[in-house]
Length: 387
Image (cartoon, rainbow, N blue to C red; front, side):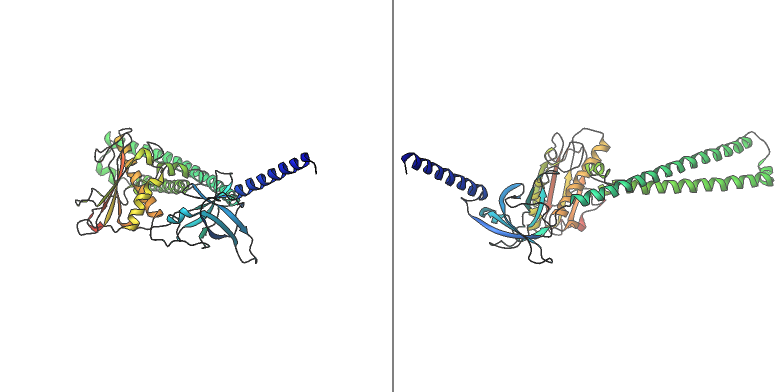
């Protein structure tokens, strides 16, 4: 073999080895770090592919190693994940695996929730619990049904409004009749005695009264129907976003778990969060960075407490009534997030909306403070006077 041929063969072999090396490194993204394997099962992987990222808290911690079809129709699809060894501190046996989508139509990835402080550590090859992925086809079908229901609700609301208008018209006519009768009495036509003994006038008054009662009953029926339809619209797929941004459906939700004031005892722990960092906009109660509350939730999970009071206040934008409702809504939304996300006794969690009050550290958009009181006689929830 000539020297040129040997040189060409050497270069070809080197390029081949380089290509194989790049391929292996691409497939093994954690090649130079210690890893361990976890498994989970799903009925449907919803388009998840091997090599897809595995994330926890939005951070990439591993990759999908294998996706294995079941050997029997009754079994589930097995997924093997290769995770970085450093995740042992946050991924525990009570963590849950779920298939998520980047955006609405993006690629699929595996999301694993953080475990609790009391959760048992995982070992190589352990099986994680899983949550079924969203089926966008089902969501589209449900959206179609919801839109149809919304149309029917709107039609019913229109009928109720028309009925109320008719009832108001009848009521106006009846009121004019009563005014006419009262005018005659004021003008001195007849006397009180003659009026009482005049059978024809008495019967006319009875007929007018019966008509008034019927009109009032129709108006009540129309108002009740309108309220029912508006309640349905609150939970409608197309309109519930407004109520979600506002933070509550009914004003009664704002004070359901409220207290008049803080307990007199000294809190054992206090958390302070700036509202502009926690909420979506200065004038709503929609959470934007819920993870700022995770420190509070983990503390409550790992410690005993008597009562927790969530105190919210606002800046001076808007009217005092609007700011009071906004602070009450923000405190209620934070309470709901903590009670739904963490394993805590939410019967001991109360809210206090201060509006534009100067209590606490007031910033441009106000603050949110969480006070934790000890489990003793001076700070039990039974001693906090609820509204």
